[in-house]
Length: 244
Image 1 (cartoon, rainbow, N blue to C red):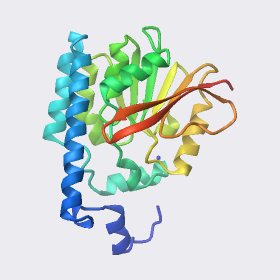
Image 2 (cartoon, rainbow, N blue to C red; image 1 turned 90 degrees about the vertical axis):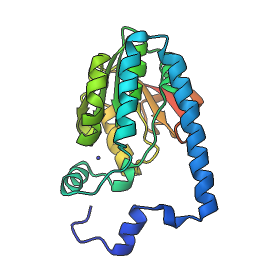
Image 3 (cartoon, rainbow, N blue to C red; image 1 turned 30 degrees about the horizontal axis):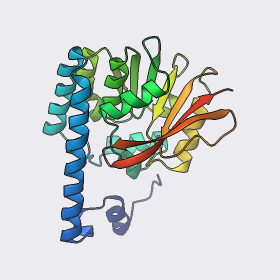
Image 4 (cartoon, rainbow, N blue to C red; image 1 turned 120 degrees about the vertical axis):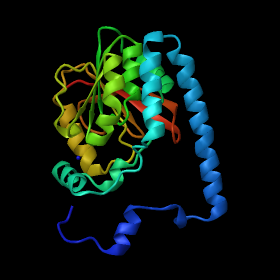
């Protein structure tokens, strides 16, 4: 979550856009915009995490690992190709931003997540959302396709009482989830369709939280819609309930 024929060189360049694809002034604007967003989201995160001192060390541990090893620079490899083929995803679907801790805390509270709940994040990346669930006292499980992401973040998250595991989101066990979150902004319609089928394995009453677009299928009722801050800018988030 891939043709076996060799990919033409032109297609490969399209799949892996570089800084050379835009003009220098545009690149400067993009970099400045990204830096400002990073500053805002980090300040917001720190303002929230200080209210839960036990989460300060795990959060800073995640941050340090992000600085040392950026998981955004995903390298093509045989193993990655095998994972993508098995999951039915494309390389470009791996390129997505993150949900800041403060954004996730606000959203999860709005969706009714509390100490008796269990959040499952499908495509958890570096796991900031899992810390948000722990901030609220809920159980937290993240499912991430790339083992490199899991190796980067699993340690600090475990110290916070959260779990991050490697796996295909379209096959995740959602039976015990009270809330399911997925940032499917970059996902193809085919991948989203597979995730919707997985959502149908949830118990009726489970809250489904999606970024950019809602679940457009029978059995999912919209409860609320919000505009929230992410690492790439302002985006819509939908809170729905699965009613079977």
